[in-house]
Length: 62
Image (cartoon, rainbow, N blue to C red; front, side):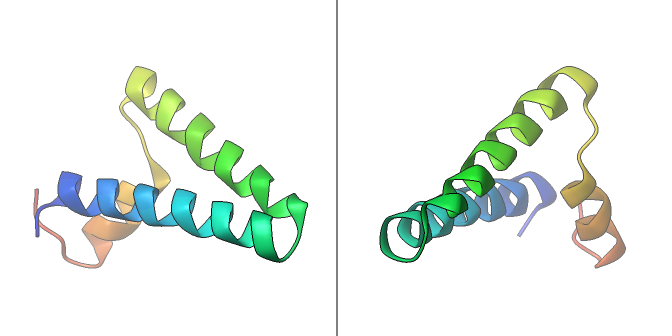
């Protein structure tokens, strides 16, 4: 799996997980959804994403 596909998979999984947890466990999990969204927006402008840095260190290729 390439880096950008892994990043989309991670972001989608985090959004879906936080929505499910927000609906079933506690509403505070919706803040995680917002955090993921803000991180995606800032990475579109800055081209920097902490998750990509971690994934590169784990050996996921571009």
